[in-house]
Image 1 (cartoon, rainbow over the protein chains, first blue to last red):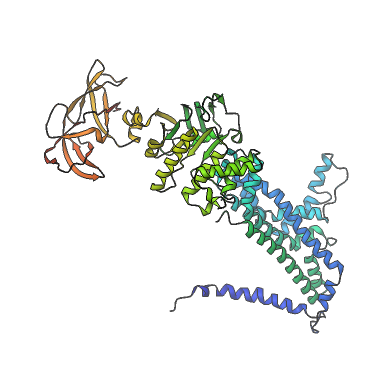
Image 2 (image 1 turned 180 degrees about the vertical axis):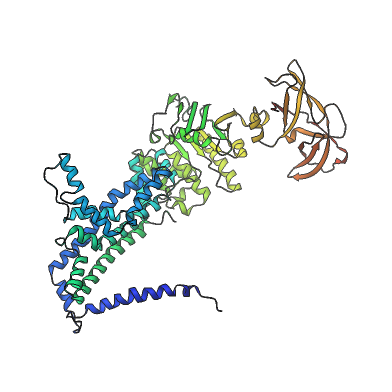
Length: 279
Length: 361
């Protein structure tokens, strides 16, 4: 028997990729160039319709903005948590990593419905704030962007924390001591040593959180409702409610291109700032 | 105010550090003179690095004080102690170039403008790395990285310099070069320096005094020569250099002189050590170069059974067995014509100063 070349070992995966990912994607692009929902008249009609409508731009911007806000919130909560993890004893670290990974062990649907209980009019947050006398009227959190960002922050947190922690725990602990011995305050050490050196993990986390939150159809629709409109909801309406597949294809490609643009910009930035840890 | 321009005294008083239940440092007291280099020497886990980390302020002590020039620094966080430290792995900031690394401490102290780069340039010139300002640490060799670490520590004019196994990662030839360079710099600056090491040769060659540590305690704090020639405990004796241990007991005590009868079959007259009584079992420790081979029997010579002889540079190492079954190593200068065959007795060399320790039976 002939020895297998290494590339031949990748063939099954490559075939799977081509048949269930690349081919449908090409099909999607093809479908988008039909004017009618019966997919019989080729033309640019759907593209003109989508990009001729100012509403489309608003939805694209809202979707990207949702991603940016979620990324910002996960950094704000996740980075200090990663620092706490780094300083914790091994036993506390095991507990923390379990708590961090926990969201991944639950279905997205379950997590999202749990947030309805937390955010609702009679939900945990409102009852707590009202019993403490901080507010007199229940806050409206469901079907608002704030509520959506709060729940997405929790749901996407593992995607931020895991790359961040993996990069940070490879940092030489002596660097912090060296910085302190040279007279730097804790804040100075954080911003001149730890943050720059953890950049590769931070960028990877941002990338994952952004891509995941902008396309999080279930959370967006269940928490956000039908009044907050993001691209995934539009795609769902056009493909499964209206059955206008060419139009749905146009929106899908727009979402894909928007997310890819931001993600490649981020990873370019990551490559530019990275490399110290592994170099 | 300090009397010398740079050297400060460093006093460690009754310092104790606990990690959970374990005592990492157990009541250590050291008085270090201005401009002195002191080596903390001991096996791994003896508490030497912990002691260094307490002085730097990275670890809090459970008890005791650290004073610089008489003033306690225990309440100060490490960024206010003004202590320079060079780590074993150098801990250079990998994302900053050489000049930025050296400038780090100055910037952290609020020095701004052209002063920073002038000081950086002069520090890098001192360690002969003036041409490497723009390089990143990973583009430097181990020895160059160490010089950057040294320049970085010295740039802020620290009151004390701490070196944590700084030569361990260097290869042998470079290690000697760096030891000489560090010693030269330290002399020039008159900087009080503490060196942590597990390498006795390094401690011997670099330090003015050595504190030999074991299990969190200082066993002996003395000059290298005194530690080598007059080890005060069995641990120091075994840890420093090579030694021969021979069993015996005190046969008589008179006017500060002890007559020791060795189990190997000889009687020696030696200065009586304090606290050892008549008839007490002892261990005699004698360095290989303090023994001599002889062809004539005598009361102070014992019979040996010669083993292998190995040339070691300019010396010859003889292996031998004594009558009571102990193994001996004897070192003598290598001579071209040696009729060694008949030398079946071993004695103390003329200027030998063996140590006596009580033996627990």
